[in-house]
Image (cartoon, rainbow, N blue to C red; front, top):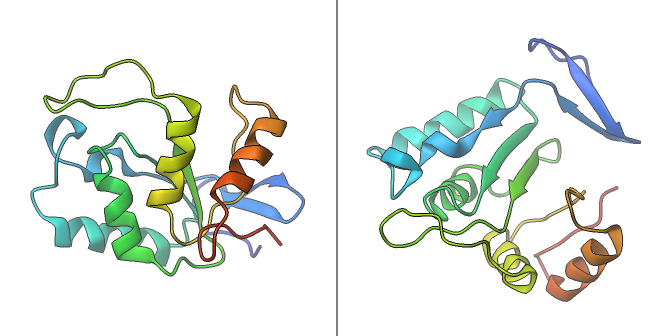
Length: 152
């Protein structure tokens, strides 16, 4: 990866896996209270495109921002995703129709949500509290044409 002009430069997470230290948190792309659509969807799309144009290489998101709203906007704005872009997501939390936070979803539900949301590619799944064995099994369960691609 070339030298970044962003504050903090880049950070190496693994062999061949560098990100800019300055990322973009997509939580506020959703409506008030991180719930529902944004007031101006076109502006949200423009912000994401500016993020990538500035050289930021990772975006933090989650399927419960909106819910699902920010991921849909990211897909609309940036798909097909640039090779240098890394989308970091969190799964498990849920939102109800009133914007509340019920108990976390089951692992199988989380895997299905990831497969449904990200039709481009998912790589380098964060291990969080899940074992690498569980992540490999999950990846294999959701793999279908155009859904997942192995890192290079």
